[in-house]
Image 1 (tube, rainbow over the protein chains, first blue to last red):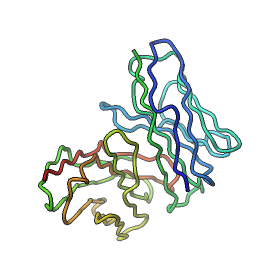
Image 2 (tube, chains in turn brown, cyan):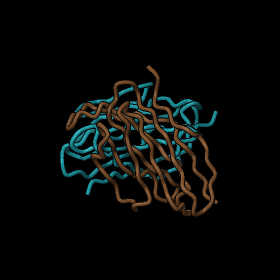
Image 3 (cartoon, helix red, strand yellow):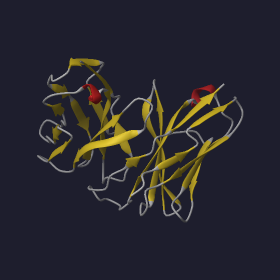
Image 4 (cartoon, chains in turn brown, purple):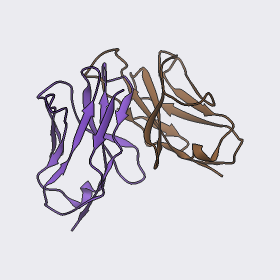
Length: 116
Length: 113
């Protein structure tokens, strides 16, 4: 079974621009979560989508948004980029069964975003 | 809120040495516990998990036991290899495995031949 895929793998943008990152989950997985990884803050949860609806949201400004399509693929968008948005953005997919302790998130390789 | 504390790195070991990476947690509910590993330039890979007290997760020679009484989930391996060099993250998921993961800060392991 194919794993989680993320595109693009690398992006370079300048301040003020916007960016869209894409994530394709493992086949059959309906939940997609996004995380930001930086050297200073570590791994932080951005948001989770399940059946095209945002189910959980982390503590990030409104410049960070996402959506999920009917095939469970997800995109996240960052508008008005700031230097501090430079990070590795990781997507994870899971079955999404609410409250199931055995459910597990599987991660993609990430998109490395550099903001100049 | 929920939190995970793991030992600061970096940890440098010789090949075939014994590895322990300590991890303790604070959670409001009954969390599932995970260890993920990140190799250079890659995303996170699930290494092992445990979903209830006294469960032992194991994979590739690594083991960790869910200790509810000490709120710990320490990672161990009896004999490390150079290929184990990576960053290891302890994480918890409260209220079920698909809820947001809360990560520790990661421990970088370097194994030298």
